[in-house]
Structure formats: C-alpha cells, structure tokens
Length: 278
Image (cartoon, rainbow, N blue to C red; front, side, top):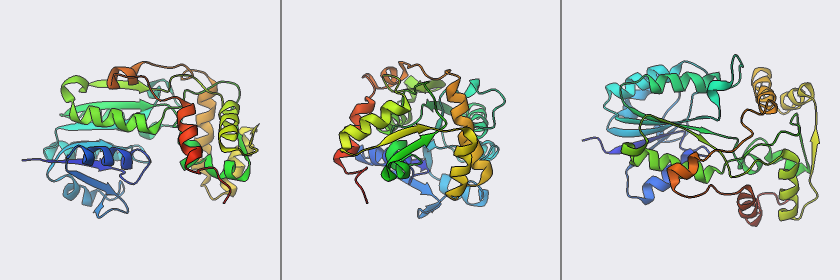
C-alpha cells in the first residue's frame, strides 16, 4: 500500500515547510532534493522511479527548464501516485510569450494532463524573498535596488503556501482539479516593503529604482548567468503591467482564514535577526 508523501525540493523555502507540517501530522514523508538521501534531480530521470516508489501523493516545485515535468508526471502515474500538488506562479496563464515562467507553464500542462488528481498553487512573490533569497544580501548591505516601479505586489507568506499545500495534499476531495491564485491580504510596493523592514529591524535601509539593464548587469556581477539574470528582470516587467497587483480570496478559501500580512512576516524575521548586520 502506498504510504509516503513525496516532497520534491524538500530543502527549499516551501518544501522544507511542507515536509515539517506533514511530519507533524504523522504522515510519512520522503524528502527529496539534490542534497537529500532521497536524491532527486530534474536532469537525472534515471533516479526518479526509486524516489516515486511507495508514494501516494507528491508536492512538486517546477523544474528550472520546460519539459521534464511531463515525463515526471507520467512516471508518477505509472508508479501509482494518486495526487500531485504543484507550486506555480501567480497569473501564469497570462504571461503570454514571456520567457519568464515557461518552466512553470510547462509543469502545469504536465500535471493537469496526467491521469491522476492534481492541484495547482499559483503564488505571488514570496514575502520571504526579502530574508531568504535574492533580496536578502542587498538589504544586509543597506540598499535594495530593483527595476520595480510603483505597481505594488501582494507578497504571500511562504508559511501560508505550505499550509495550503498540506491541505491540498491531505484533502483531495475538496481541492482536486483546482487552480488557486495565492496572494497576501494587500498589495505592498517595494519601497514600502523596505521601509517596513527598516523600521522593524532598526536599520537604515533604502530602496532605489534602477533600469532593467543595470539590474541584469548587477546580477551577472554577483555570479548569476546572463540568461537567468534576464529572466529575473523579465519578471519585473510582467509585474509592472499590473495583472497580478491585486489580491485574491483563494487562500481564505483553502485555509478558512485570512492570509498572513506582510507586516507579520517582517516582525517575525526582524525578531529572528534576519536583517542584523553580519
């Protein structure tokens, strides 16, 4: 009898939180990533069958490039997996011909076309990007410089995404076949976000708007590949269009409560010393 829930990307921001929640419920978890004992690599399909063996449901983060998710979904169905919950990007079907997010759209097509139950969680930019990812190092240095203007973003707390993923994994009768657009409770501009972080952390932090070319050059200077840097910059061009600036009620639908406010994240992270000088 299949018993495990597979978490792909189990060392990532969402994956490690999903795995912890499942374990707390007493659900057997197979935590898989490139650095986990249950080794998983999107570029090494030869190892997928071993990871999928004995799995009933799986939480999946998209591969970095389009394509592999189709083979993965087919292998999952063949292995007896009954349910996939996929993390994707907010408004993914409205990105048109943009290079940004093509991997997410490809993964959505793969999951939705597979002969099993599925749920897609399309998330806004993470609040945790300011403390665990690309925005963190610039804030430690005192200034966040981005090609983002006045269009705000309803940043979503990763803790809420993890809560929603666990509900979708464990309550398929309610959530199978659903695409949820997950947002925070209100739009927050990048300048306001930095101001809130500065106040909560007690640090002098600034936000500066720069051009797309300057941002790409800065990322490349930090060691990011030119193609990847250009894709990240393309995300800000999509945000500037305003199509995902509004909020949704989908987290409330899934969780039965309001999503966490950006200010809640800022207080938690500041209290944990996330932005303290090194």
